[in-house]
Length: 410
Image (cartoon, rainbow, N blue to C red; front, side):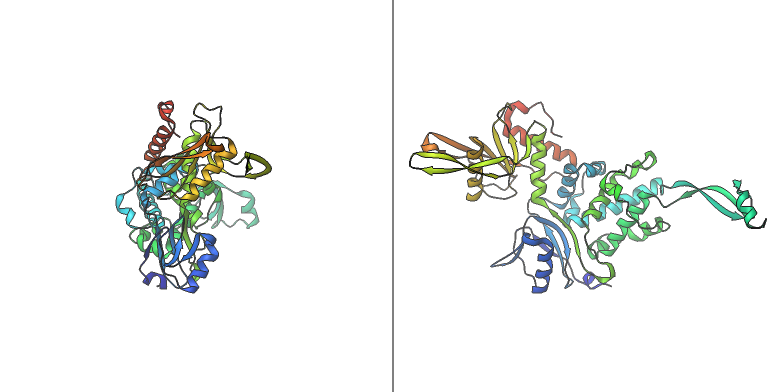
């Protein structure tokens, strides 16, 4: 049994300090870079959720205090079109939030794969093959029969066979192989693995990356595997090095801050907003005569920008996956507003964590004008794709008001 199977997983909260040995810390820093920082209380992983198997054999389950594993999985399905078929799985189970995001994905993959295989069986493709047999079947290959000297005990016949090796089956088998190689997933999925291995025993684990990328679509007979394939994509894309040949590796980590920013951008894209706007913003200089623009410019990407031509513009919207408003966040928004000539901005935070919901005003231009910054919240507790659509629609309504009441996000 691998050493990592003997070590119980340690739960770590995103942004909370924990202890690491020098070897484990150096190994993890090489892989996640500046997302691992050292503070007085120990090491801190920022903006990441998932699980890691370290060289020492320690297993870390990195969780978010703002979203359960079930919410995160349906969240991925909302943000990524190639994972949208997660909606076919319906409501994610509450009990799965006890594990990591990767463990939940692996368990749901095995559970759903077993259900579909027992219902529909393994999808196979017909292929024409040549078999040498004493019993004539199909069409005789007379050319080949002549080359073997007319041996009637081995008559070559062209027959159609249902072959198990298809792009879908190979990809599903490869996903099972990833699960079996990982210590946490092996334990979580132990009840399903023997049966699934038997059901796919005649399939070689070969990933078809066209399926993973979404450029190859399932045919009509394979459509029952849509939800399973969406889970397989998540596991194959984020699995990393794995544990082949007893070598531990980075297993499953998702940048939750980027996921939050993408969700806010998707929400407002439905009402004509411009996502990821990164036009040049000019610097200003304060003199005794007031504020004057310089010739120096800088690209400052904003999550969402409503131009002056929009009915609710101009407006800057920025996503902050945090639990409180920092002074640096306010200064950043004031800089955006002054640089773009905008007087209103909104910062979006995960729901349920802001203690102070007040708005902020910053006088500019000698006190004759002001920048107003409002706060809004996006619910991050949805456990199916439909709940995320509703949460985004509510966010847009809260920020833009009755103008969007008849619109549906997504």
